[in-house]
Amino acid sequence: METIIEKYRDLVVQIATPYSLGTGFYLSEFGLIVTNEHVIRGNKSVVLKGHAFEEHLAKVLFVDVHLDLAFLDGSGINQVINGAICASDKVEIGEEIIAIGHPFGLKFSFTKGIVSNPTTFRNNLNYIQHDAALNPGNSGGPLISKNGEIIGVNSFSIIEGNSIGFSLPIEFVKQNIVKFISGGEVISAICGSCHNLVGEDQIENKYCPNCGYEVKLPNVVDAYIPLGMGVTIEAMLANLGYDIQLSRRGLNSWEVRRGSACIRISYHEDTGLIMGDAYLCTIPKSNIISVYNMILKENYTLDGLTFSVKGQDIILSLLIYDKYFDDQTSKLFFSALFEKADYYDNILVEEYGASWRPEYQ
Image (cartoon, rainbow, N blue to C red; front, side, top):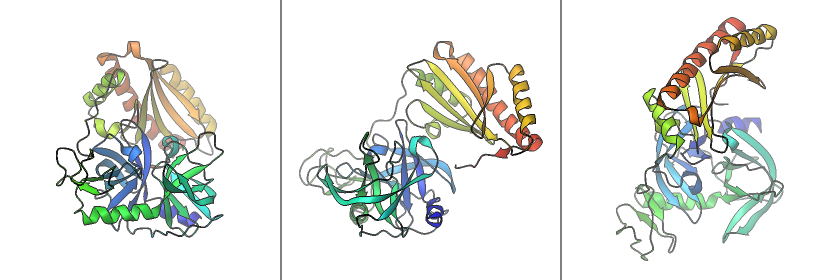
């Protein structure tokens, strides 16, 4: 199992939009990233992040609302990741499987389980039912057999269903890849009525040329416009020189890098709190007392920032209420957070023996 999981570390990617986080997997044979349509819905392009490449924007090339499938442009990573994973159509009841994804925004986690029913009929489609836990963020990730073959796309689970998950069989992915390639690999969608492929060079006033049903291509969706406090936060990030599109990590969430530090920003509308958490490094196995003494001492001198330890992570945080968050104060406090984060992680590693956090954990 460990060999299989490591094999997929470079192939399973995290997908971020202004609305949600999800998972996809790369098929180098076709240069495509496969995911669920609901993961990328309402976006012309999405942010990709992976173990073996820098985060970047990738275009949405193909959608099938009926099957809840989407293909993304994988050209930004196909020079980094070698080889495609073979897909198998054969699934047996009781077969051991692995579901890989990024649940709750966590980086590359997996759950094991067995196939409960290889042909469960739901939503007018056959799904693979299994008991590998699927959580928010797992959508679009691969379901993998014990032989290391992709057998499905993790699609949804039953709430309070005691780990009852459903994955779309890989055969549907292969069928749509054939359609996409035969259609010239242009931006396209499957018509929701006649299920024919409709490319951007075929569509007639947003209607299917075959049956007249309305078809929405992924390149004609409305651009995302932030609302409320999101406008102020994104303006602040832009003023500090960060790429807004690459920073978005779901609804009211952002992530930026300053040097070697990773800073996560979130806005909680229910409480009015805006939080900035810089995950600096992990505590050392020795000399721990001196590390705690250092961060406690620094907490007395920091203005508006606070050190804390969560598990193995040393975190530098900023907490501010939205009613105090304007252009001037936001730039002042967050520029200090970014600068101090990049400063302190080096001090903790070089002088106190802390460890760098994995880039893609």
